[in-house]
Length: 71
Image (cartoon, rainbow, N blue to C red; front, side, top):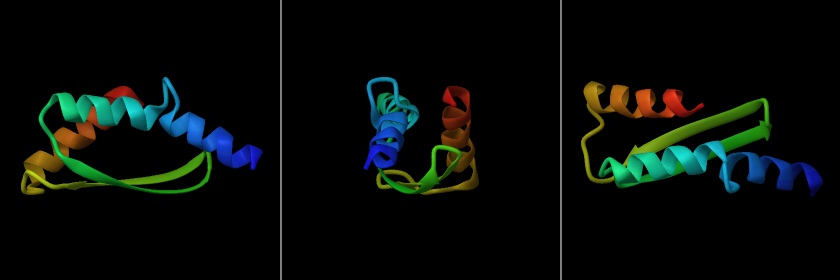
């Protein structure tokens, strides 16, 4: 369970990377669901499903930009 706690804290803890991304996306007016698959802290796959905007190429680039600015 220690590994699970470590990964959860890394992603969603006080300064967790996904928590920071989620907070920034919400500030920008996005409504979304987050799908996460992880094997370790070094192997994390994330997909954002937009609920209130069409996932056009332009919107995908905006979300990617926010994500990569933070991580």
